[in-house]
Length: 273
Image (cartoon, rainbow, N blue to C red; front, top):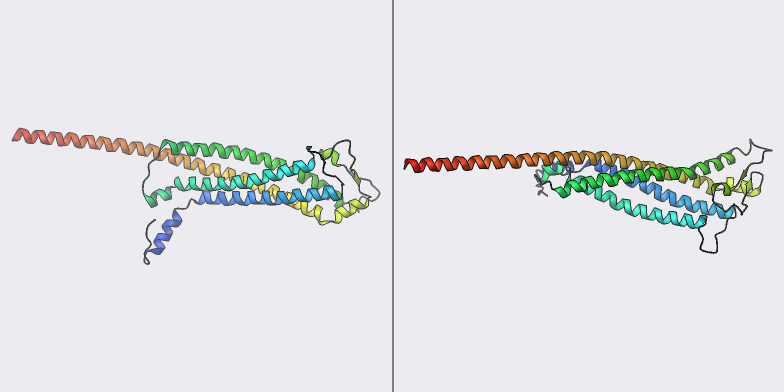
């Protein structure tokens, strides 16, 4: 990078700030915020779900290695760890791609050579980002399921005073949480139901799932933003490639004209002498 003299420090800083791909930076910040919100809130919401199932619905972990609800929650937690790590690296890669295809970087460091590998990398990032966008749409749809379930439970708890005399029961079997043979029904008139409604676990878990859903939605928006940025970068690289070919052909023709002119000048000089 250019050396900053004290007199021209402001000008140098403006050039450095001009070299930052701000669209990619905004998309990266939105992606990190969304993934962090989804992973952090989702992890804590799953932990709260385990507490609610064990304390109020009296669901116990299976002693054998079977695919019960607690095993599925543990698997989802490991998936969350993988998502956090993978998209941290992916955000850095997209930022690097944004730097190398930014026109401001070209103006700051001079012209650069567009290679076939560079165009293939840009196309690969577009395809990969599109796949990730579809994946995050699926994650958003999947996260809305526990939000819907907890909203129903929370709504019943909020209306228990209005529903005096009515008997409403919560059965986790209808959501596939426990096997059909195990009865874990909890009705509105029971003491456990009132304790669950008055506890902080239900309210906190419900709002954590809402935050996780918002984080997944933010990640979808970030993926769409990245697609726009990558498409613009791809168009820039394509135009730069065409301009590069034009400049090469123009330079070659000028060199040929110069060689022809030099040859004719030498022939005339030799004929005169």
